[in-house]
Length: 136
Picture 1 (cartoon, rainbow, N blue to C red):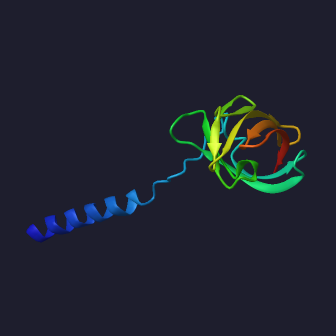
Picture 2: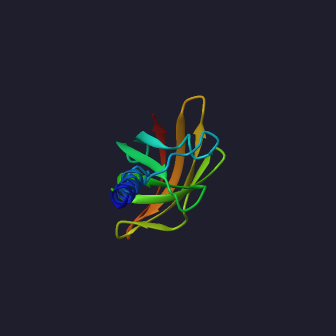
């Protein structure tokens, strides 16, 4: 009887360990989540700086309207933004890297599956207003 209890407890403990490893660290939004249309890998074309690069938008699990944008502005940094309907707005006055301060917003178009951005960044010498198109 003691062996049976021992094996039952061992099996239960093992099951807990196995299933706890299956929890996702980066949750996916539900289809009704306003952020779902923004999530994913985007091809970016900036008209002012004549740049093409990729950016990745992921869920920020700390709030139901927040996202992270990796490689925003081709700065190899993570920007924070909030989503409301078809608008994505950068967290005001973020610093990316050591000297860049950004602000701005984008609008999602379901017809073209694009985000049209307008944002401003400032380094210690210049301030630029940039237009960008994110497409999948």
